[in-house]
Length: 357
Image (cartoon, rainbow, N blue to C red; front, side):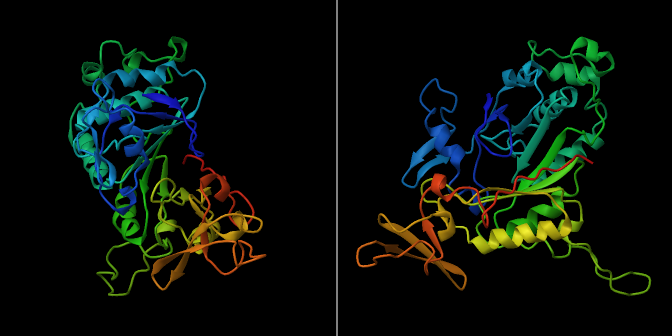
C-alpha cells in the first residue's frame, strides 16, 4: 500500500487504490501492469485486476479502493514527498468522488508531507472539484468522519492541534502540500490535458512528460477566444508554460517493448522550461540513449533507431566488420538499457523542483 520509491522525483508511493485501465498511447507499456501481474494470484492484492494477454499484462478495467491504506500517512513522522497512486489513477472513472474526498481529507491534515497526484484523466479531476464546490458539507467534519474507516486516527479539523500530533490544514483549496499534475506523452495529450489541469486549484501544477513519445511544444497559446468582443482586436493568449505550469518532468520509456525518445525532444523541452524559468527534472533516457550516454566502442550487437521524418526506423548494428566504430557515430539512439542510458542530458543531470505558490 505504501513503500519507499526508486522513482527519482519522489520519496515514496502511497496506493489507496488498485487497478486501472488504459486511456492513451502513454499506457501501452504500463509498468504498473507488469508489477501488478506478479501479485495477481488468488488471494493476492491484484487478483482479477490484471490479466495476461498475448501482448503481455493488461488491466481488466476494474478498480478496487483500499480504505485501510488511508491510515498510512499518519504514521510517517518524517516529512517526505509522496506519489499518490503509482499503481492506479486517483481520478479513474470507477472511483467514487466520496473516496477521492477521503484521500484529500487525509492529505489536508498531514501537511508535513508533500503529495504528488498525477492523472491521465484531468476531465474527471475538474468534475471532482465541481462536485466539491456544489456539494454542501462534502468536507464538513461529520461528513469526513463518516467516510473514514474506524481504525483511521481521524480528528475533526476544529480539534486538530500540533499538540495532538496533527498538522492542521483545514478543508480550503488549494492545499499547500498537494501538487496536481497530468501525464503528457505527446502534443495531442498536451493539448487535451494541460488546459484542464490549469482549471483546478493546486499549490503546484506539474507535467510528467513520460514516456515522451514525440515533441511537446509548451510555447503555444492556450485555447480560448482570440478576439476582444468590444474592439474586435486580437487577444494574445498566454502560452501553456506561461499559464501556471510550475514544474516539468521529462523521461524516456523503459521496460519490455520500450519506444525511443529522440534526444532533441528532451533538449527542446528543457530549453522551453529554462526560458520560462520553470523547474525541469530529467528523470531518465529509458531503454534508448544517444551515443554520448553509451560510451566506448561497440562490444556487442545493439539495436539502433534512426528518426526519419516522423517515424523511427530500426536496425541492428554489430562490431564485426565495423572495427573502431563508436556509439557516437551515425545512428540516432541505441538500445543499451536503462542503467547504461542513465539520466544525463548533454552531460549533466537536471534535478530541479518547484516551490509551492
